[in-house]
Amino acid sequence: MSSEAVTPRADRRLHRARQATLLSLATGVWTTVLLPAVGLTRDPDPGRVALGAVGILAFAATQTAVLYAAVTPWLDQRWRRRAQLSLAVVAVLTVPLVGPVAAGVWPTWAWLGASLIGMAPLLVRHLGALAVTGGTLLVSAGVAWWTGGSVGRYLAVTGGIGAGVAAVNWFQVWFWDLLVEARQGQAAQARLAAAEERLRFARDVHDVLGHRLTVIALKAELAARLAPVDPERARREATDVQRLAASALTEVRETVHGYRVVDLGEQLIAVAGVLRSCGVRCTVPAPPVDLPPRAAAELAAVLREAGTNVLRHSRADWCRIHIDQEADVARMTVANDGAGDRGADEHSHGLRGLAERLAAAGGELRVHREDAVFTLEATVPVVR
Image (cartoon, rainbow, N blue to C red; front, side, top):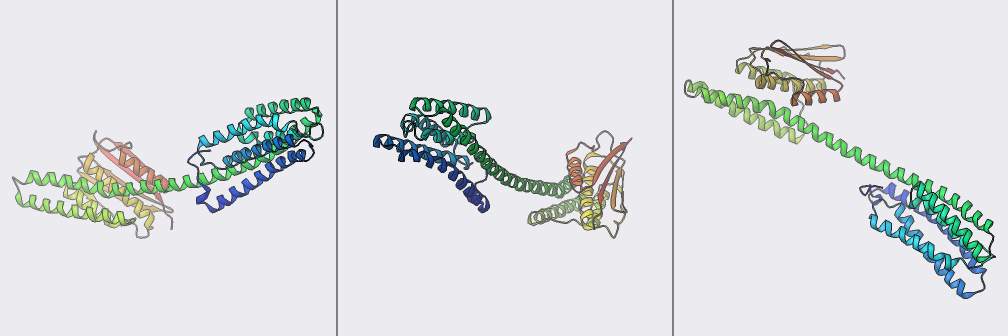
């Protein structure tokens, strides 16, 4: 079990399930411990009874520690290994301590052997459990031969009862592991949802800032070039840069304080105005009046990136934007004549992010280039 497993202490339902599993396991184990105690009542020698009682109690205590570790996934592995090693040592010591108790009258140690086999699935994997079972059966037969008991009876108790206890213990721990893994899956799903939300927020910030900063950089460069030859126009461009920077700051603040639904009509006007101010002839239609807000927001994000690409990657003379709606699909096409060898392509980071965003919304982004004309086409489903 992973050390990063969820802790039932923080989950009430899982805490109750763990308590029920522990109680069920302890009931089965202590039942197999009480049966060896019957041998204590049938042995007339006080010394053997005392030694047998010490061995049985020590065995029960180490068993309890191993059971606790089996249903405590956050437990340190060193503690878990110590509990298992203690059980192995005590199991060996029970042979001389418990083996002679009620010799020939009651298969005292055979019941401890059955309990040990029942614990095997909690200690080791399949091959190891088979090895523990085989070794325990050999020890049980040896104890029967040493104490004068019935080898067949010892093997029947150790093997038969032990197999039944092992099956019950394995099923309970397996079911408990399923519960823990299910909670881990739910926790992982919550972390994934948070990560996706952070990615969505990062895309929104990129969409808001990318376009604005590109325009600001271009206008600042233009103002610097115009300053010696046309101070008045340079002043206007500098004022425009100041306005754009303030607008970008406002948009970032709105994005931080909550999801900002962008108006597609406003975005069309803004992109067209920026392109025209940079000398690009731009044809912009009005968006469909009945376009749902969700589809409009997705197209607005695409338009921002497309406008940024026209400014950043091309030397376009014209740009045409077309938006239409057919049945349950809205489509936007943005084409410009400045692609050349420097135009944006489908491998650019911004377009790749847009493609992922549209795919998550059930849409699609396609780009193609013909000579110097670069065309971007985005489609989104219309959900009303």
